[in-house]
Length: 137
Image (cartoon, rainbow, N blue to C red):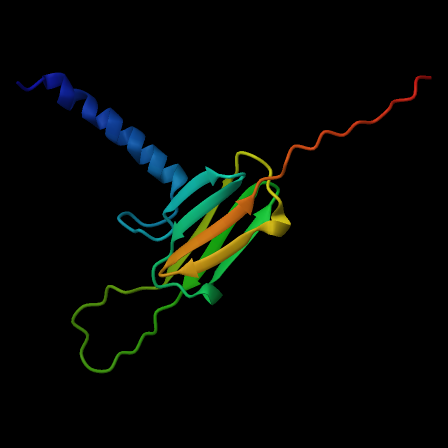
């Protein structure tokens, strides 16, 4: 049985999805470039980012104040010998940044690129409890 309300509420859910994509993603529609998974395991975060076709020299990873930023630019050589029938390949840029839930040790961040997937390991900082005696005046 079909419920007419099912179709009535669909535009609202589509619009909500549109807003999420608009504010969260910087990659073109249908692109897998820059898609991200973030995991927490054994006192560290692991981020895996899809960067197909990128070389490690074309990618930069920054950590500033609990914010991880991944930037990259891949250029396509424009060799045009002969007649071009279709041209879909283009230069690609990715710039993703997001705040991590907890502070990390920026000096212990490790990154590696294997088969178009950038893996970034970030060791969480242990909460530091400082004890300090306060002089009473």
